[in-house]
Length: 356
Image (cartoon, rainbow, N blue to C red):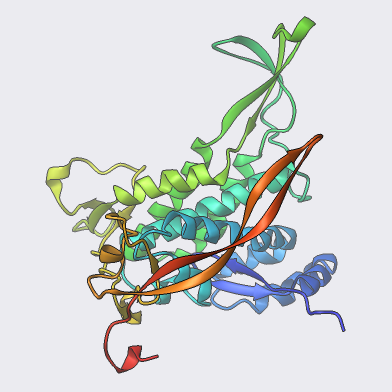
């Protein structure tokens, strides 16, 4: 019997929903009927989101397929810190329930998910995966830069379509009644979208005798999403604590001595927990069982990661490639070698709920 198809999960600031690729293909080709069935089964969609879902089922499929990349990037960025983003990838439900406090971690989640949608859709457009968009139609004709004139050609990633759709879909979840949390989410969504737009670079190809650049053809291309993740992590490190003004219309810095608030910074309203122990009510999954580096003095070190609780050490066998040799032409042959290594993991907090 064939194995059932794996599920595709759509993680958005509003929800995490799953559907099976085989089923998705059915409603894709069934047009309005199929998309309506799928979209009506997704919980907690805002009316505008449900409308966009029904109108653009192929876009929703692309978003679903690209989700793992965004969550993997989040986990990669925080792999050496107490909060490692893993809870977001495991849980199914609202981010507001999973991360109930208005912390800088929540700010990063909203920004990276918004950025991830933009990046996925812009690439899908230029790669011909969607019938609602293609290459950026604005990049045509002749232009110039510091190196002289050039012709727009190739296929520029369609950042404008991606930003427009992501803004319409994700921001719709915050509704018309804008409370402080909604304004915070909208701000961080915008930072994420802008991060992807700013990551675009101009690439060119020369045409001329002996490779000269007498004639150039250029296009705009997205850089690897890792660059966006690195950028947003720096914004996380420098995130600004804010409070709502007396009119309930905008944010101001919680600590005015730090200068003016800009639209390019992540914002948060509540101080983060230390994430040392499991406290679901605060969004903390704890660090019990997390791997740590015994010799490091950084955030991945056992002293910091384990919050002073100590750690367990186990000797395990690992397989790695060794004795690699190059064979002309052009392969590398390696042996599989076994080695014993010490693995250190944080102890759990003492108490009944942590007994294993």
